[in-house]
Length: 135
Length: 67
Image (cartoon, rainbow over all chains, first blue to last red; front, top):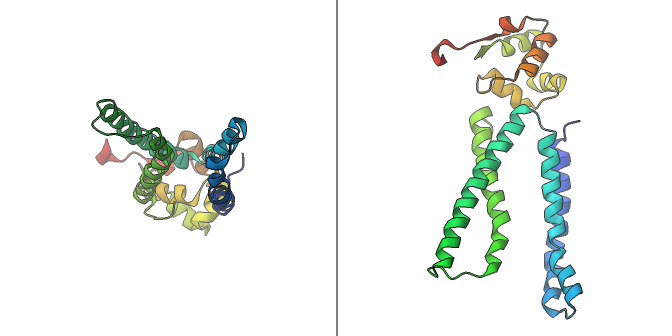
């Protein structure tokens, strides 16, 4: 499998994120005003499509990476999963004990938190391995 | 692991990017190998040895301090 160039990856990511922003700005406000359950469900789930597309794009990038890139992706993903899992379980225990009152919409932060920790870990790994800041 | 990748690459007049392209890896991977931050897998080490027409043991040497 041919490697995906950084420029091509960034362009595809930019297009997907632009679609996501457009959906959140123009389609998401319609959810609260929509009456029918089926249409409301469809509108509510529509922004999940670009998120899935980002995950597929990232997976393709990892699969086509070389051995060092794959290793760094794996370490960064493991760290992100560990940090977010621990934060989730702590939050869940606090919520069950009614110490921290939180709604179900807090789940929206799981994916961004994963991305954030993954990205930060990648920056540290790339810096340590290659001395570069460019991931 | 000590290696002679930088020395051999420079002897061939290749940049890190050119070597990376020939091996189908990223320039960052070549950089990490040359600086001893990353030891390549056996298949990649063989690809390097074949490209530079060297025996693998003449290119890579265990780092005594890390033994």
